[in-house]
Image 1 (cartoon, rainbow, N blue to C red):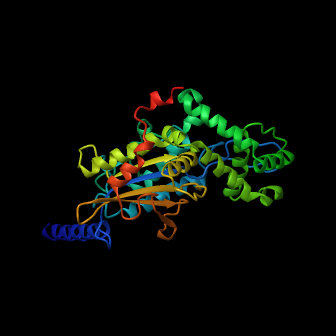
Image 2 (image 1 turned 90 degrees about the vertical axis):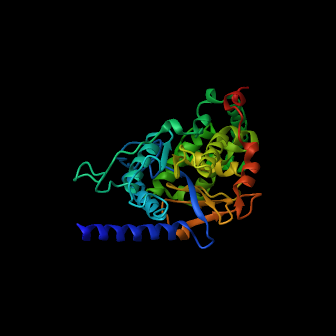
Length: 368
């Protein structure tokens, strides 16, 4: 019994030491809070298009996660556990006070979160309720979501935003590059393509097949970069003006700020990590709202990461990171400088810079 206790204590000391080493980096910064905004994992196309010679069977249905997406979700959960090992519970167990997880109401987002959490929080011995099943249920709350990607599909949700978006989409359809691209698509697919959304769905379908390692027609391969460029264009137009940024992404930005402040104040409501699973139409607008330029189109599993640190001088500073796909390798995670707030970016400075993008009352501001 004494031997077991000493062995357990030594193990705990090793774990705690590792936690301290990993939590405090070379600059003597201590991690306090992490926000992760992630695109869902690999999915099937949203539609089938005319003249498609690929008779692909999407086992889980159109728009749903593929088997690759399921596995990638699980692996990302494992990668997050490893990356934040020293920040999370030292005994590697799930505790409700540690993490909040939200998604949009779209199934592929909800499922991405579920599989990810299975990889991130396998039950330890104490939490195991079925010895044949290394899984435990962890809450996923769509009610927490401040993701307003539905604004682009349902004008009734925010009429002021919808009016401006309609105008911007009409302008896109009139540009020479886009008109030429649409004509090219029409000639090869026989799809009518009268609206930006119709073009987007077609482009997405072909692009998604390629991302799933299926062959696509030669005519599509010849203009493949144009497909990615058009997808990115459709995401950036969602927040083309400051008012659109404020209405579309402002509430999420405010939510993140409030969570950071709760962490600093050690509020009982504070969590260590807030993870939200959304879409390409969540990630690109959020980055644009932060005035980040030269954005690349986010692949499945791409993430915006915001890490809040405390310095030895008791200041709080913020790091913005971008991971373009589902592989959480240090070599792929890019540190992005926040415009107007060079590193080390103090939280109070960033809060001041972003205030104009936060709506005071979204419902009132959405009205015409």
